[in-house]
Image (cartoon, rainbow, N blue to C red; front, side, top):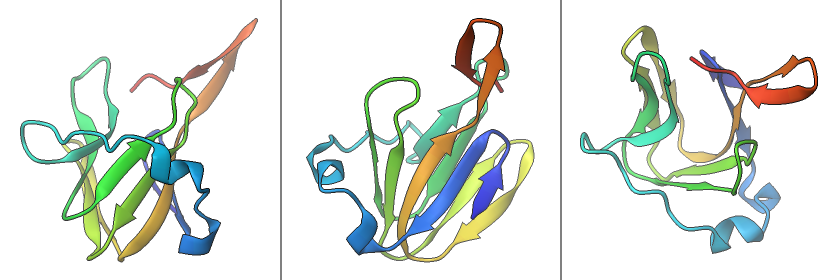
Length: 108
């Protein structure tokens, strides 16, 4: 498993990727060519992956992301060290927190 800030990246075997992931739209890359996993609401910085591949995300604020890296890649962020990722499939999860009466995605 890999973690950068409020983003958890879990390697999964290709056979464990749910069939519905293939039906999700591929998320567009940002202006810098990165696959953005999470955008910091406060700073505008992004947890992003550089390298060939694709990111698909389930709907809703708690929807999982499915990242495919055919050649590997790197997770980058303006305030964290880069994390190299080997080639393969990953499930991307945003950290959540409980506040009285609700659960919300952690704001970076």
